[in-house]
Amino acid sequence: MIEFTLSRVTLCVCGVVLIASVTGVLDGIYENDRDAMDGQLVDRFAYMLDVFQSSGSDSIVLDGGRILPEGCTVFVHDGFVELHDGNKKRVSTTSYQGEFQLNWRDTVTVTRRRSLRSS
Figure 1 (cartoon, rainbow, N blue to C red):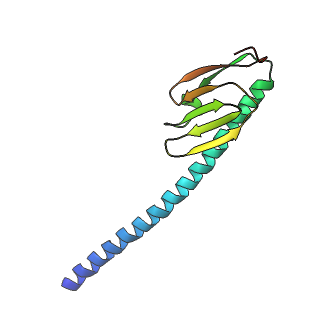
Figure 2: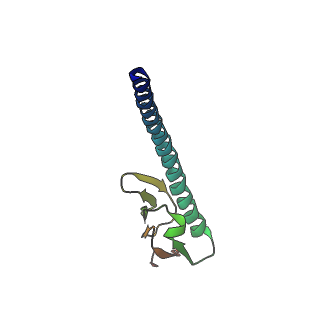
Figure 3: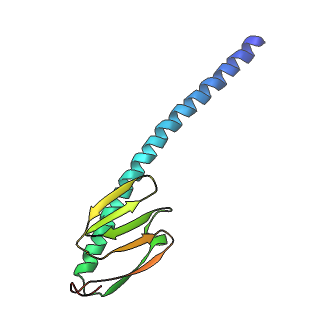
């Protein structure tokens, strides 16, 4: 009877160890996927600003809740787009020369600069 109990305890311990090892691998895969998606997001955000800069539109409204993942912030300045998620920063370049900050809960109206004298 004691052998049966010990074999079940051993089986449970092995199962817990197996689940813990798989969880670590899955967390690593998830983190790699998130890094790749955040890199694509900042590139697409920069592309959107490039298209806006070359378009005939004078302003665009950006809703952070629809564009950004929770907890992320975008800083646009000096031809760079920076995506911050607390721990990491991803950077892309853009032809848009304005400056603004967009948090995931904010809405920002961005205007296109027509000359160096406009803001």
